[in-house]
Image (cartoon, rainbow, N blue to C red; front, side, top):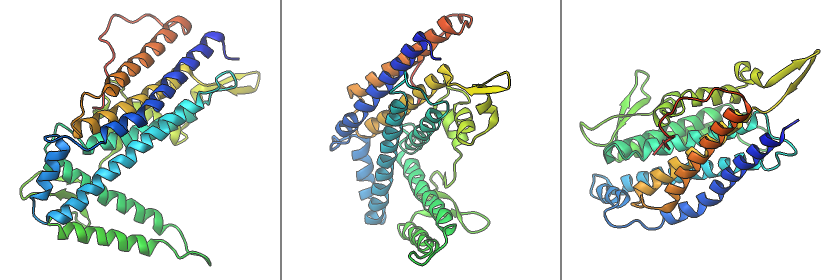
Amino acid sequence: MVTVPTLRYFQHLHRLALDQADDLQPAMQRIMEPSPVGSPTDNDTKTVSRSVRSEDRQRLWRQVQLDCMHMAVNVADHLRAVALLLSQPDVGVPVYAHTTAARAAIESATNVAYILDRDHPFELRFARGIAFLINNSREACRAASRVPGNAYMLAPGPAATRSHESLLAFIAHAKVELVPARNGDPKGVRVTPGGPVAPTTVKMTDLVPERYPNMPALYNLMSGVTHGMPYRLSSNAQFDNRRARWDPDPLDVGGSVLAAVNAAHTVLAAHAWHRGRDDDPAITTTRNRIAAVDQAMQCFAQEHLRLPRPAPAMPFLATGT
């Protein structure tokens, strides 16, 4: 049975996640208004318009930006899913599902931050975006090739393969260099002669720790649940007299909310920087909400789990800009 303090803790987490979900869409709508002159978006657009094969490259860059928006919507959707999973804590809180929803948000947010990285020049960001298009198309081919045809549907594999080959041909026509692997498939992208190369395949297990250094092992722990690994599932089980029950871990639930709100901060900060709107108030609000989730987890652990009080430490900082 959930105790009153635990119920209140879950209610508090639900409210923080729901408030963030409610704030995210209008914030993104403000941020995505036409960008001011001199913003990174404006400068990137001008750079592409002056480049070789400018029309082809503008089309590629527009697709990269659209994909970043798709992933921002995915973050918002899974953040709201986390909030909904906690909406009736007096009835029940999922044992595991919140983790998988938070993981999806973290993955999309990490991809957006990787492509729209303020710490790198446009030529690398553009190369990363094109590399992402290639990998996305390649994954679509792999999925489609496993779907057989039937009496009412052609097998989708050949069409997906043609689409992938068309994308590669279009990229080459745009004078974007595709660095080949030994098997001839592109393993990297370079948009300017002698410029930096962006790999077409990157590992989420590398990107997430780089983006969220304050949450070590975050991706590994979430993936353990998503992939059904007992090393992550068994800690929620209690055995008594040959009977077993599975209960949600309050700190696991808090960790999922913390991850999902961090993901919201990541996409907001990345798009706001790119659109020249670093001063949008939603960024500060989201950072404060991250701190509130972290504080709620610390207080619950200290007051109800009989954990030793830690030594004074630096305050939690939002990551994933």
